Length: 200
Image (cartoon, rainbow, N blue to C red; front, side, top):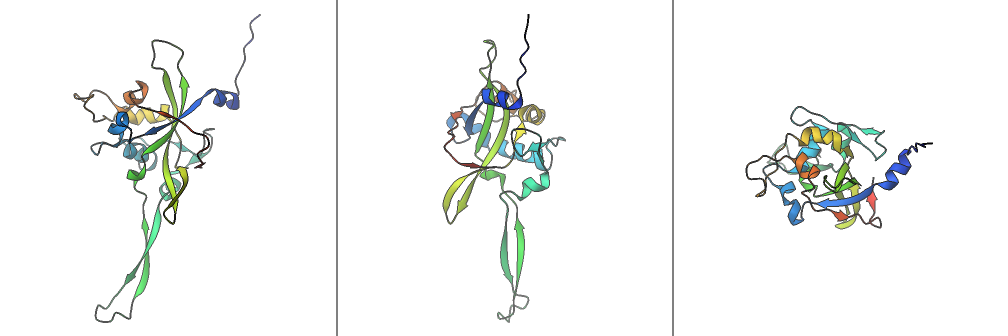
């Protein structure tokens, strides 16, 4: 008799692993190339759309709670107040004005990744499941933790990444895309340290 064991979401997640991809690492420098940086690709893919595709972003790895582009844009953004002097000859008369300062994706350099281990020897050892860009949380010049901006499923991101060439000496003819970069495991990934506080 054959028994079929179905994994629920929690059991499936327990079998998955987490890692950190940092674009400061030598193997990952192509991700921060000014010609076509990955941080711009992934950020625009969920906020304004990229190459005609706007993909869904999620609040967590259950992938049930969608976070809207409007909500994403607010994360990491801020406000600045300036004094306006309508009459240059009268410095005593002024008023304050507050402007919205949008988040700059260049601040993204690290990504939390969920992945499965491939068991087939003919395939690359790591299969990316989801990616979350991280930003630092600072208070009074003190870094408190890292914050997840959003999660994207790699299968969704691949639609966009497959249209984006990465710039690297190892890709002189521009034949490889960021989809290839992840699927062929061309990156360097560090183990995720669960003792590091990551704010969601």
